[in-house]
Image (cartoon, rainbow, N blue to C red; front, top):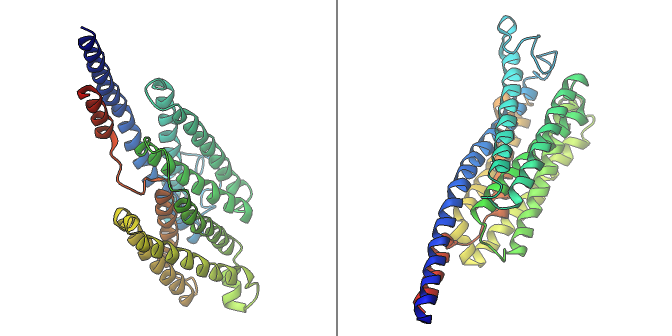
Length: 324
């Protein structure tokens, strides 16, 4: 009788686990999908912002948040106005998407991990700061430090969003590889610094002054020199993954993408200088590569470096308990 009672309790507990896991997975799947859309929208936002800067369209709309006093300025529309208008529209849509995710996390707070609403509140705060910097870029007439801060917040939004997505995927990991994360964190920080130097380079016209008059070359030379430690750190990561064969087997797609982006980024940088920064396609591609580079490094830092067992592992453990 005692045996039957224990067996019944285990079966009830097993059924509760299945229902609970499936119930929660439904909500988490929604957040994962919204998170994927957010990453794409943020990368697009950064690239469009770069295109706006390259095409000198940052002040194409002289007022903020509207453009020439209207939501859609048909009477003033040209390429530069369109870029600035579309950049603001994309930023608005990203803000609405993040606000929507935050609202859902509050509504479903009892069905999702406790850390999720708190992290979305941080994300929402960054959106507000980002919008403030966007307004200041217009008010301060494209002040270099304001433009640089604007890009910094955009990258922080991208990194935070990707970290949330990966933590949702890897909620069952208890012992991440700290040394592997640290190895990946180093080139991520260097790439962020490199990007900030790049923004300073373009927003202060230092590159044009250096190439045309051979003056104020410090920022340009620093930007070029930073390519060496970034390249070395990526090659070190690849070598470590090859040595630890399991890391290479589970992450080869991301690592291959890093190698491709590294060499294409160097090539785009060289082409930009060879053409005296007169070909916007090279500079915009350079910005896109940097965004993808940061996105992949962040994904590798926060993802499970090995195949995870997920729900089936939990269910199998419960089945063993019942059978015993």
